[in-house]
Image (cartoon, rainbow, N blue to C red; front, side):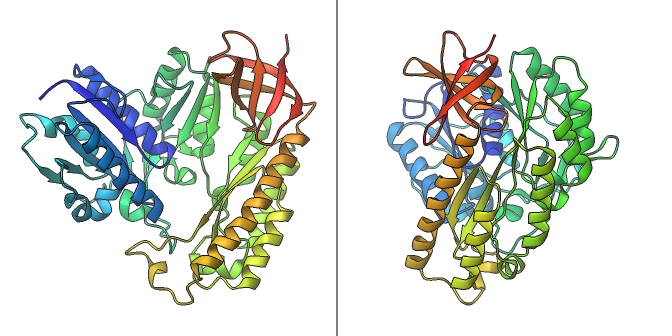
Length: 429
């Protein structure tokens, strides 16, 4: 088998991190990485199955890989085959199917194989509480490095397929995380993003919880700024809020999934809070960190969501200080409790409700951008777009600025004006 390989990743930042680790192993084994769509000897698709749309896009990517490189050895890996390997096996041209854990051993499985071979390997996910990880966890194409600290989930929300795809919650050892963070810093990254399936569930017997891990990370010399990926509200406490408020290294940005602003619907979803609890936490956060950017996810059309429940969600979202909102319609996942719940919402109604929420989301985003005009922020610049460099502020605002050679630079800026989806700034000396 030849020595060129291409990759395609669907889904979350955690999936991207894992693809980067797999890519790193291929490079160390002498492979050359080519762009997806170019001829490759091996093409690996790291899939997602969290929604029906994600499953559809995964199948599309698989068929594109086969079309682009008909002679390639096609590897389909990750959450989709972990949940439904039989469906993947029916796609003509797929050579190897690997589950969520097995994908990291892809090079071992490839030994001695050729294009005519078919290998399907899917085992149940890990049941260990702790683990270590090898690999760099970064891509040279990005200026932000992802650092995986936890995998799996024990929450079993009634709509969610993730615990079945990712297995039980398990945390990476703190010493292993710290070692990789130091390595990433030495490679010049200005921002490290802690990623996980359920970040709030992180725990190490020697170091403690996520707050304790963060305290250790920010105490290390030269560690750049740290951003947190999505975190569940039920594990946010005063100590965690105070740490973010008092640290210059931790980004003033939290993504806290809401799913619904109606307590009855939250109960049906088996979420671990009601609307009053959620509001109380956000009130505390904003009081301590007024400049913080808070993003969220909202699900529309969950079974049993009557019009009055949706109106409650609308009112709640209008009241909450969100800087951006991801809106998506309920997508029944096979094997979850919600798949069989009564009182399904009509698809046309879901579409209408989603549109209403997205309009509100856009308005809240514009308001947050405008609110930041005149403020100073620190920005990691990522890319050049039409003679201006673009990056993200600590509170997760897309920033554009005129300048030269700003990529991967951390600069203090003043925000001059806001547009629909970004702000314009000037660099301060």
